[in-house]
Length: 249
Image 1 (spheres, helix red, strand yellow):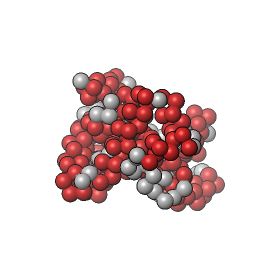
Image 2 (cartoon, helix red, strand yellow):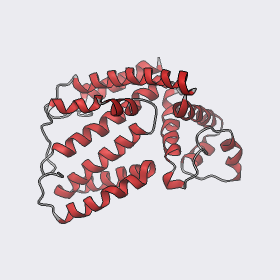
Image 3 (cartoon, one colour):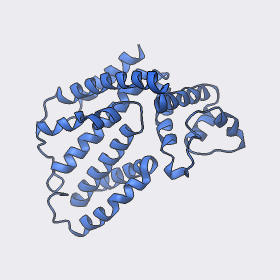
Image 4 (cartoon, helix red, strand yellow):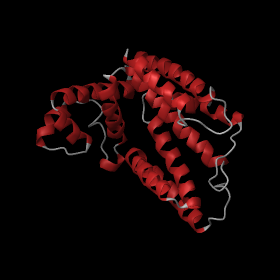
C-alpha cells in the first residue's frame, strides 16, 4: 500500500506540475526511464544479494531500519543523530550499526553517513519499504542527470532544447548500474547536477533564488563528495571572470 501511495505522489509530480519536466521532451520519457531504472535497480540488488551478501546496499538499508526503530522509540535522539550530535548517549546505538561507522575519514568525507541519513529520513514516510527507497533514489538520479544535460546544452543559462539521443547516456552500462540502485551514486549525481546547473543559472542571471539554491545544493555536494567539488572550483572561478562564455564547453 505504501508503495502505491508514493507512486501516486510521483504521478502527480510528473503530470500535474513542472517537476521532472524538460523542454522539448515528451511527457512519457522521464517516467519511462524511471521505470527501467527501478526495474534495473531491482535486478542489481538481487545480484548484490546473491554475490556479495547485499554489499553496501544491505548496509545502508540495515542502518536505515535501525534509525527507523530509533525514530519510533526516541525521536529526539534520532534527530540528534541526523544533525551529527553524537556523544556518549549515542555510542551504544552506533555500535550496533553496520555501515555508519565503517569509514576512517572525517565528517566531510563520510559519504556513507550522508546516504544513511537520506534513507533514514525517507524511512519516516516509507516504513523502510525497499521499493520506496529504490524509487526515490532513482528519482534523484534522474533529476541530477537531467540537470547535467541542461547544464551541458544550455546557452547563457536559458532553457535548452536537449536532443533526445542525449538521454541514451542514462543507459551507458556503468551509469545505469551505479545510478539505479540504493547506493551513493544517485545522491552524488543529484548533488553534482543541481550544483552545476544552479551555478550556471546564478552566474548568468544573478537572481537571489538561484544563489540560495546554489548554496543548498553545494552543501549537499560537500556532504556526499566534498573533494569532487574541489575539482570544479577552478572552472567556477574562471567562468565567473569570463561570463561572456555562452556554454561551459
